[in-house]
Length: 196
Image 1 (cartoon, rainbow, N blue to C red):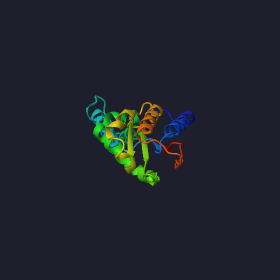
Image 2 (image 1 turned 90 degrees about the vertical axis):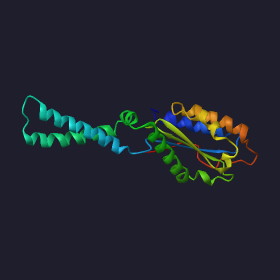
Image 3 (image 1 turned 120 degrees about the horizontal axis):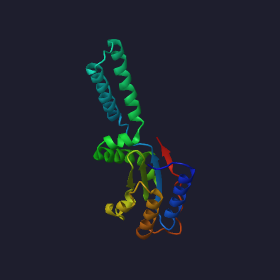
Image 4 (image 1 turned 45 degrees about the horizontal axis):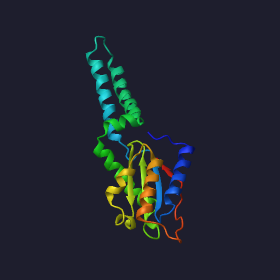
């Protein structure tokens, strides 16, 4: 998982500044803690743990008072659900890859609008959306980039493990496909935006 600290934020900002140099494209970076709640997955873990505690109470050699079982089973359910919901590695392991991908793509599309990536002069904005829990990156280009850069060309920059290197690769690609002109101005902040 990506370590978020001031050094990381500053490295991303420098990478965005370098990537935008020599191109008329605008890069907007959003780093999300997660792209979906996965509450159903956590509830499933809680249900399995509660059922296991009930089976232990029913089939153990020692006798458990009914009141203790009535208190223990719901407590195990709540505790296991709470722990599972706050354990990204567990959620990542239990949620199918197709669902994680779909969640990231849906969240990226939403942030494309929230961050006004479509508001650049030449419609040359590119959202770089990094989702930490899912360990996935989604790139959402605006209309000005879709005709210039083929979707397959973005694939080399989709590594969540090294965001800074991916941004630099995007910059190199954009400088060859969409070189900047003399009047190009920075239309958006270079600092990454962190969302929960």
